[in-house]
Amino acid sequence: TKPALILKTNQVNYSLLDREEILKEINNVRKKIGGNLPNVYLLHGEMTNEEMNLLNNDPKVKAMVSFTKGEGFGRPLLEGAITGKPTIVSNWSGHIDFIRPEYNCLIGGELTNVHESAANKFLMKESQWFTVNYAYASKVIQDVVDNYKEYLKKSRKQIQHVKNNFSLDKMAEKFCSIIDNKLSSVPQQVSLNLPKLKKVGSEAPKLKLPKLKKVEV
Image 1: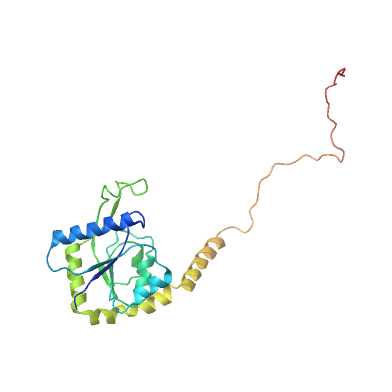
Image 2 (image 1 turned 180 degrees about the vertical axis):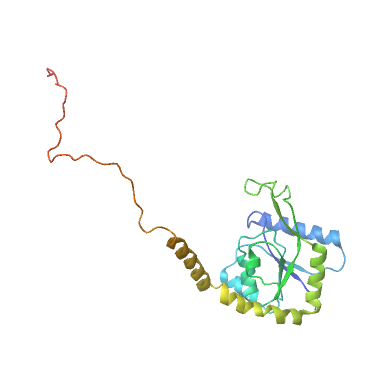
């Protein structure tokens, strides 16, 4: 069966104009490459947790592919990995904490300068991001297609790894452990060097007020 690509993305927002711009870019790439290319299905817009779960677990969806340039954590990758399907992803940034190389396909590459079109006040043009080796990545994807059962056998082991280490309960335990360790290093009693105060009598001190002149109405 000929593979296809489900592309979940947006550029700026979820407007109709944004969707049309992405479709235009997809068609431009297809025309530039030419040949008998796979179909590309664009998912554009908000999806509920239930919809994302149905998509990730749909039997027609065989693998997750992400050439991300950097992730803080990578929740979509974790949600994909828990399905037990092969994950083909950049070998860089936060998600490599839970995407195990022995179960999935981590693609190497190099740090490159941020493209000027993406630079803004948050992503400075002097900074760098990760760019995968696309030639190698294409070979990996083809090999996953040709030997899918072997890759699936390995990637299914990812399920238990995620459940054991990255469920909400497990991460809550980890956070509590970190906080407890930090609190245990804080002294329980802190001595404060306060200035000595003079004792004041029970009567309030007398105030010397200026004499007021009577004003005739």
